[in-house]
Image (cartoon, rainbow, N blue to C red):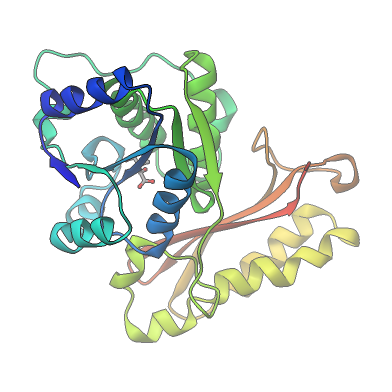
Length: 284
Ligand code: PAF
């Protein structure tokens, strides 16, 4: 497995691969890896001849400097995990390689309504930062396919929009969320939960599951209200529970007239922010 820090070295390896006609799958990460990330590597390996994984805690997507400081960093363990699943190349650049002085990496892309709701509302500027760093990686790596987890459903929608707007020649593959045995979505942030809050954190998955069947009999707003109450247990503070159209991310008004419905939620468990979602109705 290659372990590279410099964009120059990365491009040299990739140039050779391209000349050999090999397809490249790319998995962007911020490290603190868990089996969910490894499942993306597995999928990329099944569909491509070469798999590149980046580990970079991107400062431009953190709207809260405390969150950036507290973001878990486990580079040694991450590298071992990636080697164990057979990733071909790990790119771990220092910030200066991604944001070199003198290079304008700001994007001039509007995400319209996709960026105003849910995470966009509670984490202003977050998606501009995500799009900025992913565009930079796509420019450097030029992969055939980009592998993203469904846990960050809104992020996938934003990046699909980016790829579409800029006509980037990359296929986006959204992979299912991996869960702990009690249903908690795997996340790098879970290690920061106290044992007490960790025990109760399955409330997100339980609420997404329990409210799904209400869609037949209740208006989405009523379900959202009910879910917010259900999530308000001691130690937890829900930010939102929204039932949205999976394409536009706008609130669903009439569920019978919408063929792609996703319930999305974000909650503070102590000082750890957790997100999750569930596709309730899928067009496929
Ligand atoms: O989902 C993440 O871990 C990050 O937002 C990403 C896509 C690696 C960009 O920094």
